[in-house]
Image 1 (cartoon, protein in one colour):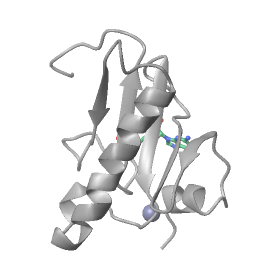
Image 2 (tube, rainbow, N blue to C red; image 1 turned 120 degrees about the vertical axis):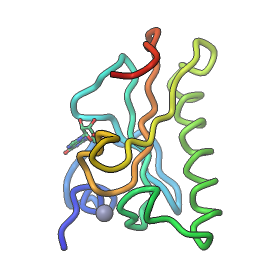
Image 3 (cartoon, rainbow, N blue to C red; image 1 turned 90 degrees about the horizontal axis):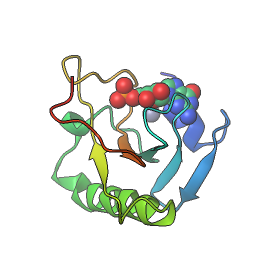
Length: 113
Ligand code: 5GP
Ligand code: ZN
């Protein structure tokens, strides 16, 4: 089954990559919702956080650390930022490969719409 973010992870589809390591890749969102809007994904295909198991615990920890490193490296750490996992239909998930949004560079409203 084809997956857009698996294809970005394997470089079949181009993206503006911010950082990459053994387990994750981070790239700019194509339709940014904030001055900084990066998606951090595991290279392993997981449909969403709902698909994760205990076996993925280290990978998920790694993903969160990769997200905060992106925030540091793109200079939004001091101003503050948000890490978001949209999950399933009501969560507003449109791409069915687990991804963490890293949003920063402006004051973000709460609660989300
Ligand atoms: P979701 O709505 O699933 O939480 O977020 C999916 C995100 O992926 C959206 O913010 C959307 O703009 C982004 N996106 C969709 N297609 C592409 C693409 O081909 N390239 C990149 N870089 N981002 C994409
Ligand atoms: Zn995938």
